[in-house]
Length: 223
Image: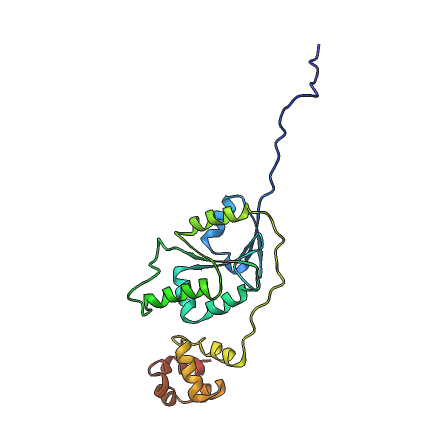
């Protein structure tokens, strides 16, 4: 005789949980963080994000390694990125790798107090919370916790901050090797336009920027 099926059985049905989704800017594809997030079971979607590197539960996250943070602070790229983040109600700056690289180096030409002052400016002026993580695996743990928060629809109707004419000119001149913000401003102040800088002789450029003129002129004239 076949056993009767008990319709009142309390046997639990296994519920398959849908993986949490993280929207990631496609330029982050080579980051070690991505492989860790995939191992943790996240659904990864790469897009061209106008603002931020990661979006989790509509939280816009700008992620910087320590060296990238310092470099983008020096060339002022981070200021633009922070201003763009203001379009999001919830935003976060992650500085990754403080166990792997010194955040306040003494001998790289940047005053450690300038870095501390910039961090304070981000927190107080721009009201953006910051997290310092030990490495990419530690960053992934923070992202895991963020993903468990109540799900929100991603906000993607954000725009890049438009540069004015002066900022655009400076941005172009900073594209030359060894030309940082101060040098670019100095060149534009002296020669007024990009055209005048390009057409200036090496001797004229040297009066303003010294030996950097040799590299700059070589690139300008190279086929």
